[in-house]
Length: 309
Length: 288
Picture 1 (cartoon, chains in turn green, cyan):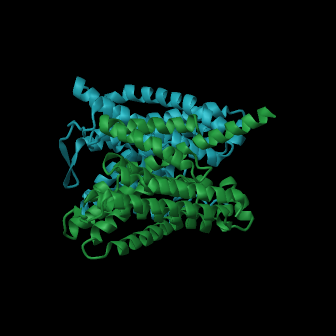
Picture 2 (tube, helix red, strand yellow; picture 1 turned 180 degrees about the horizontal axis):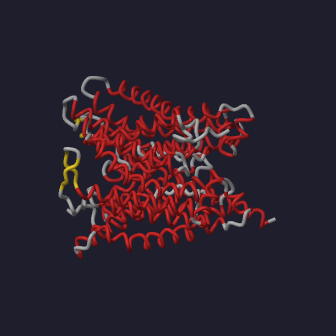
Picture 3 (cartoon, one colour; picture 1 turned 90 degrees about the horizontal axis):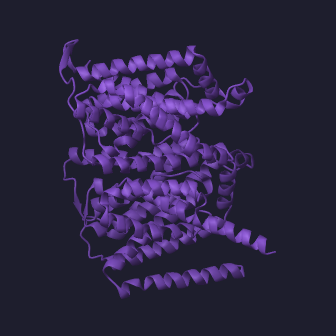
């Protein structure tokens, strides 16, 4: 490890350690905000792992997340919780692989369109199955897990996402993905199996989203498909990640914190205006900070240094 | 037989919506994901005209079409041209325009929810049934279908016979070569984008006569239009018509035989089959 990497590692461990102390100070409002922030951190960071280098905009987050939640909802009475988490990781990865096989061999537009309606489609199918195979639509998830437990679990997953992201960034896979993002034809000519690289990364991202859904299921206690597959979730994650910037591993985090608080405030005061705010956020990102806040800052720093010489 | 006719009637209106998207994506090369919101806006206009003034929704086409044309022309000029100028590659333009039109779509939904509320809206116009081939079909569906056929026919004639129509097709085939033969590509693209938006809004007017809609349903129609355009092949009018009829038929069959809640799943099934076997569209040739 280079000195810089050691420094970053120490810094991250300290930050994570500080974040882990939050439940000791408050177990009400701020803890619940903390859980939401961590949830979006995992989702946005793992989204950026795939969509950052490739520029493929995935809108499947809500679908994976909902799968994880539903798996816990279905199995909580019969299967141990830890096994359910494992199942949700596997299902997330398999689903991502199937979606990837169908769409990622083709151009990016097909992928965006396919993921756009995916959550809604799965919601329809699950509701239909529940209506026809008997059983009620809602499921109770009764555990003795509190927000504090969920918070710590999510924090561990955040650490895992960052580790995986860091490892991918310096592996062959990450390198080939950056080439694909620059020019897919060049990548193919270099002998990179572009479809395989994209599918593997998409699986990583799907796995984390599904796991997050499973981890958050106990928070709701009552689960039904309409709740699990909230279509706006995918878009919120995209906005947060792009606003923060996907050029750095910690970029999405910069978008997650302000947006979680903003959404929370709007939800509390003007619940019907969430969509309008999201629309404006999309437009602001495209026209004002196309490379995210982090990208913009890096640009400014570079300019400043050049000007200083 | 019931399914066949209802499906074809529905498919006729889908054709119109998909033609609008096809003009925008095939000619102006902008993946417009706010397309469905344009449709809902048209539907709202028809709803408002009918409930406020008791004027036939079909007459509201007369002002919806020019308004939507102007609005889309402005959207293209003000919001999308800067993106086209900025883009270094087609891929970057694609992801930029996807994000920008998502933003537009969301903003549209937000404004519509704020002004009209989030409730479902529908009105009863020409709901009387008429007998045909032994079963009863609502008159409004039939008139909507006829209107869609007439508009599609006019559009087809315009694209094939008139000078500006041929310019539009030339840009669809190859923008670079089109500019070599003296076609003002940016002007034609703006025209096609605006026209596409107008056609979609008219589709919204027609669909509002027989379907119940709400402010946030637009994305579902965007999805359907996209699936039709991909199935038919980008820029292929004939393919789009057949694809729209297929989607209308399959959706109606699934809704009547299995469950009305599964229409999107049916559309997805078609989509997956197309992606796996004919990603270039029904009549498209594989790209090299």
